[in-house]
Length: 324
Image (cartoon, rainbow, N blue to C red; front, side):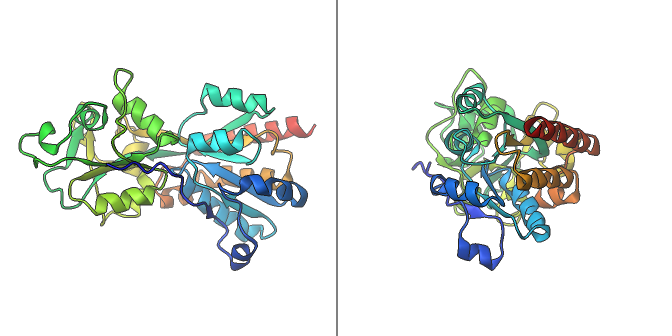
């Protein structure tokens, strides 16, 4: 199998035509834009997780309808790629993350005088998908899923079940810079084995959709939002964690039934960017929207009102600290 670990082209969130003309800060060009951003202000730059991207995209679109004086731009670089290449070097204001910030990333940020401020914004039901024509499979146990995705594990569908086709897997999954990769590796593969390198690795979740859609013997995984956009093109696999198969959904994630692949989603705000009024306003708006149907419309579970209030209280305290 070929391995595609190249990052995706960035995607701007403000859909208006004038932004297309002026350009949007992106992964490949953020380093060249930092000076301009600092001089002009009224811009919020975000990189990181492709899983969190749809939430941030929806929030940013709603925000810029209210604040057409602020440009919000986002790149899909993977959680780790966002931290190491953009956020910790001080090139972005916010990092989308599908896992908690790692110790090495905290150290990297600290070396540059940056403290990441964490906010939980949603819950995801990380989803395993197959081709709709794969009529032999509706569910997998965690152990079967581990055998498919670990190094030196199963190579063919028939290795998992004698009644399944004697055909090799075609694997599509998150790149190693992705928080989705880290979470899947921890929740499914575990510490005693390693995730296979023999798969199509990408930060483009829609590439996974296309790959699985194009091969009867393909299997992949990504955030639930990308499945919910394409339920007729790919098929979700129920996961059996010992209590019987459970299908991924907003409801099963909310009720804690979809284990072990339900996970919190985060945004991290740079304390160095927080003094900027446009960053403050955007993050306030984000925290409010994270508890609304906007998140469920994207395909994730909104945070509770209590969590929203906790986020806002912490945000205001952090703003007071950096502006006093």
